[in-house]
Length: 331
Image (cartoon, rainbow, N blue to C red; front, side):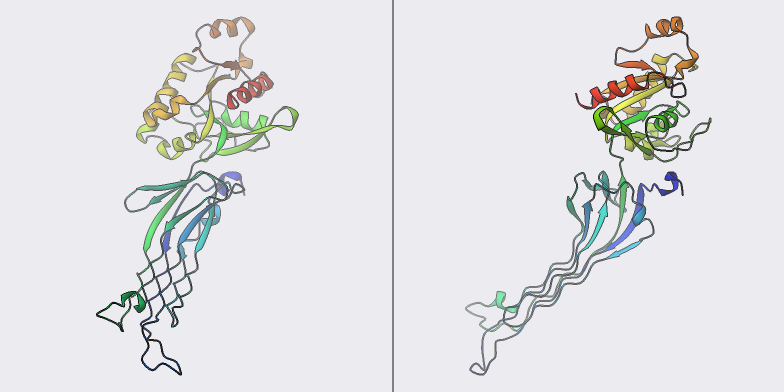
């Protein structure tokens, strides 16, 4: 199975939390007491559906075929002021960068960003109060208690934003997959046509002194992607979680490098202006096609930003590119 078919970044699940237990309406009786007061305990809350961050997970694949998640019901209150047993929570472990949304309203509920972080996705019903809560001067022996709240049943969407140190940004066929295959152990599918990469590929890039950083090859964006054209929003959202953006423009682009870079930049800004604050590096790919004189000529018209001419195939400029990226990540 290829990495592509293993990568799942969107699941829709039906969450059913547990109902709360009923409070007890028990009146105290023992060998010495024939008409004691209320001693009914409270019902317990129903189980929650909980998300928990797990830094070892990279995908939502394990939840793909789990359409229904059901938590346990809360126990009823018991005599002698004993509270019922809390309903069993159903804890779903998810990768960091998982966003939870209500499927019906589209409302974003929260995002899991830290290992071990827990958030309640669907709350269990509250337990009912036992009859001892309702004792008063005028009502010494209340013979009633609260019922427990019902649980909730709601459809939720979990979306994964890839967490990576470097996100590769470029039009389809800019050489992103080729670069990733050269600098890391990832083996993305590579072909010479647009939209080869339909899911993000992640690679761990080895650096000097046993250091490393994570690079994500994000599917190519096209002009108009921020409006949902092409592969649209679904893939642009992965760029949000990258620390550094590596823009990749091929040396043989049909327009100028500066123009192509600007189009990519405009797409990101239209999608989310916050992306403009991220450090950027520009790599001119396929530069093995250029001689020294042409390289110098092209460099004069490049945007004022860290840039480098590289060729993944010829292994040109790869070490220097890693240096640039490491500096940007840690600046």
